[in-house]
Image (cartoon, rainbow, N blue to C red; front, top):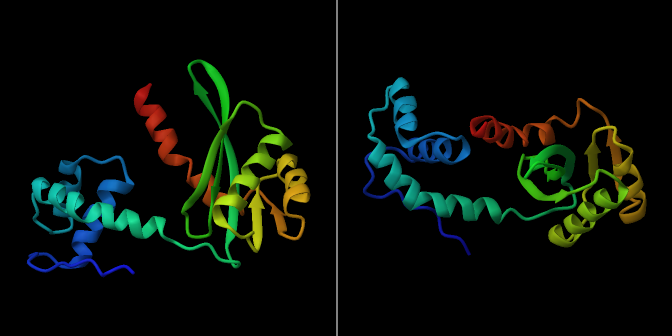
Amino acid sequence: MTHPVSYKRHRFPPEIIAHAVWLYFRFPLSLRLVEEMLLERGIVVSYETVRRWALKFGPEYARRLRRKRPSRCDIWHLDEVVITIAGETHWLWRAVDQDGYVLDEIVQARRNTKAAKRLLKRLLKKQGCPPRRMITDKLGSYAAARRQVMPAVEHRQHKGLNNRAENSHLPLRRREQAMQ
C-alpha cells in the first residue's frame, strides 16, 4: 500500500514542489535553470531547495509512475528510430501507452518482422495482458508481427495517430544533439 507523500514542514505548496521536481527530472535542465524558470513565474526558491526536493520526493514520484498497472483498455503506440552506436546503425524500438509512459524499448540491428515480433512478445510478458488497440506508423513489420503474436488486437496504421510514440524519442534526440 502506498502512503501519500507528506509535505509537512514545507513552506511551498505541494503543487509548486511537484512542478519543480517534474521540471528537473522531465527535461534536461540544471537546478539553476529550474530555479530561474520558477522565478519567471514569481516563485522565489533557491536551486539548493530544488535539489533537496528532488532528493526527497523524486524517488517516490518515480515509484508511483512505475507502479502504473496495465489494463485491458490500454492503447499502445509503437515506433522505431535509427540510432548510431559506435559508428554502427541500430534501431531503437519503443512502446508507449496512451498516457505517454514508456512501456518498453529494445535496440535491434534490423528493422524487420522478427524485431517487431520480439518487441511485442516482450511487451506482452512485461504487461501481462494485451492492449485494446495498437497504433503504429505504416511499417509493415508491425502488422506481420501482430498477426503472429496477438491477432485479436485492433491495429491502426496511421502517421498522424502515432505522435505519442514519436514524441517519446525527443529526449533522446536532444541528448544526441548535445553530444555532437
